[in-house]
Amino acid sequence: MADVRIGITGSAGRMGITLAREVAATNGCVLSGTSELKDHPSIGLDPGQLAGIGTTGLAIKGDAREIFQTADAVLDFTLPGATIAHAELAAEHQTALVIGTTGLGGAQSEALANAAKTTVIVHAANMSVGVNLLLSLAKRVAAILDEDYDIEIVEMHHRHKVDAPSGTALALGRAVADGRAIDLDSAARRGRDGITGARERGTIGFAALRGGDVVGDHSVVFAADGERIELTHKASSRQVFSRGAVRAARWAHGKPPGLYSMIDVLGLND
Image (tube, rainbow, N blue to C red; front, side):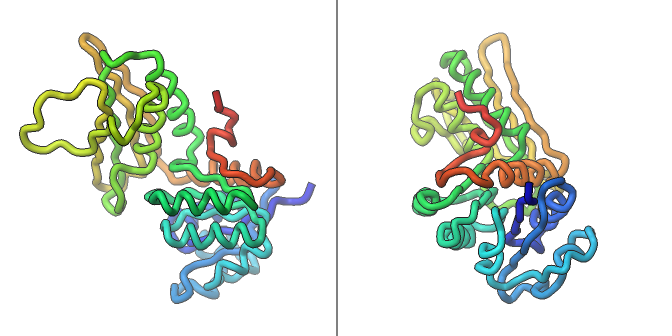
């Protein structure tokens, strides 16, 4: 069977470099092209040299279109605006697109759904296999425990993260809300300050911590009188995200068009 040809957007960033290393280390995969912003200083450099994996014979492109023309799947961990542009290219060239970008708005999510009508889109707030197991467990626990158990979602990331709560924390919120068959937007309490009054029964609280070089910690707390259940995942390396993304790219190859998640990739659907 031929190798899966994988392209990477945002290839000079921390995540892009980690992805390139993972592709190079995975049997059955080959790095087929990489891109960056057109005025980025890495344009023209060999992505293998940046990633420390040796010369690949490729050059980082300033136009992502070129990598969609040659790849079976493209990995995208960039910014919402860039991701939507890449989804349009994926649809145009019928190239599978694996998206780890967070912070997408409603209109941007709709744009992904439109692209998925003609190509494979795998979008997950977190590509880690462990986090997706956590999502599945959190939903099941929430379905079992009633509103006597208050739900709090706590996350911590490095000081450079620009969005809060994290995309993974919001995904966990959706998971527990689905488990309880309630609307997350109505139940969510995303910040507390000052005299807030007693906690409202049935709400889902969020707390976002930032500091140091924390890759990503997430906990779902179910707290009742007399006991507390905590489900926690801690990432100590970005490799867990790149490993999941490459797994998703291999899974997506040859699949029919559609909008998928890591839950689909891992076969964790109810």
